[in-house]
Amino acid sequence: MTRIHSLGYVGFQSPQVAEWLPFANDVFGLECDLDESGAAQIRWDDRMYRMRIVPGEDDRLLYLGWETGNRLDFAAVIEDLRGKGVEVVDESPELADERRVSALASFSDPFGVRHEVFYGQGHMDRTFRGQRATSSFITGDQGLGHAVLIVPDMEEASRFYEDTLGFKCSDVVDVGLGPMAFLRCNPRHHSLAIWGIPGALGLNHVMVESTDIDDVGRAYDLAQRSEYEISASLGRHAGDEQLSFYTRTPSGFDLEFGADSLVIDDDDAWTMRRLDRRWGNRSEIWGHQFRPLPPQSSVHPYPAEVAP
Image (cartoon, rainbow, N blue to C red; front, side):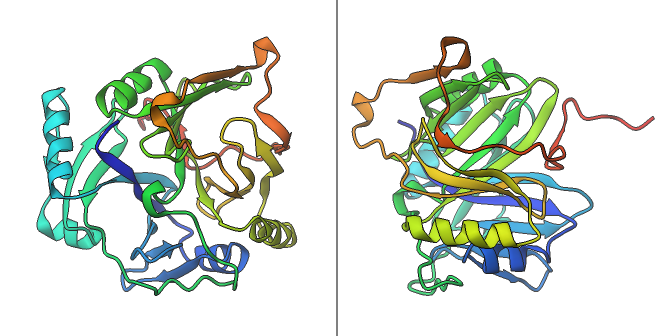
């Protein structure tokens, strides 16, 4: 498996930064503050941040940050990518310091999505204070959770993320909305999923996993009583087996909040599975009734529309 350890952080821009404070703190029991630049720094463990939302004119994914275990793994990932023809930029110490990491490099996928690889993220031991007594989340060697990218070409994306980056495919799911490949780089069932939708590119959702199913239930109650839109009701997936629900965030993508997800303990013994509606397969064990909400503002036309 790749020497990339896990999904370490997500960077996003949005005109609705301040709305993240009540959303993250009051509904989901995370820890969200605004820094001196006006950006929302969101954490759900002792890392200095797991998601950063900066002010911007539209809702747009800026980068995904991939963690390596140490300096040697960091150098090996860069060498491997360059050997496969990927243009990798050695980022400045100033940008690494801004990201709160020891060293930083960047590269792009075939569609221009920026990815960063790093090691040594800032850690503040025993300082996470979620907004509920039960706030505790599965991170560590599984990273922050997972992200789902909508990509315009599934085959090209699979070649990049599997062949080039070295992620392994746990499952492929196609329920008639376009194929999704669930990719792992650690024992979590997937740290990244790619969803093939021609003509579209962007962030569909980020998943945060609680250690407590009851905390998911409490958040579900709070979300239903809030002003925020529930994108999908409480349910359990057939693939990663997670019990979760989805809420539309202030920045247009969804937050999946769940617990009790599948962990792949024996990587070599795992065989990729396919769930396909044409064959009578279902992607949900129960629940997850998706609502017909407006299109996500975090997803944009691809290629980008050019103003006349």
